[in-house]
Amino acid sequence: MRTLVLACAAWAMMGSQAHAFDLSKVERKLVKEPAYKHQPKYALLVFGPEAKVRVWVVMDGTTLYLDRNGDGALTAPN
Image (cartoon, rainbow, N blue to C red):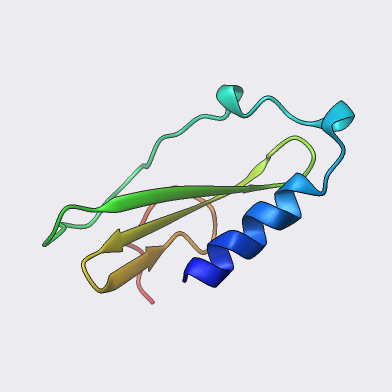
């Protein structure tokens, strides 16, 4: 997991700063969350020049929830 995070951070830093999107403008809202058993840890991955594709990743103990279709709901089946 740590390697994946470091790889994503390195990839993000390779982009040109002249075309960087202001990430403070990205809406950070989950539509639907499961009942967590532990204190969840959240990460929001954004893709594209205007950060239009947004994928939530939430770690709940040893359970990892992934918003695979980018709709902000972590309770979808599968």
